[in-house]
Length: 91
View 1 (cartoon, rainbow, N blue to C red):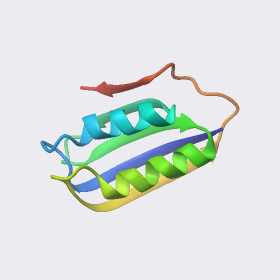
View 2 (view 1 turned 135 degrees about the vertical axis):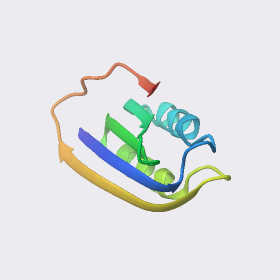
View 3 (view 1 turned 180 degrees about the vertical axis):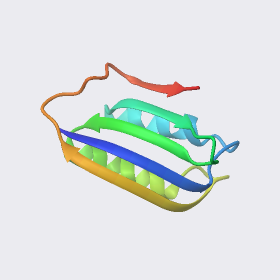
């Protein structure tokens, strides 16, 4: 199991980015949350199997069609088990 703490920069607010992340994470069985930050970036905290986190990071770099991702600062660490029960959008 792995925990991802990522900050995504670019045109990532107001383009459906959080809903995109929630949809991708849900399809991968990854738990955690996504939220907009006051500086215009998006924060993602996700926990799941390493290969599923790899797929999520690839999706974060791509983003939905109306976004333009300029940087994904991703920090990862091993965990024993997830502390989340699903994947949510936080406001």
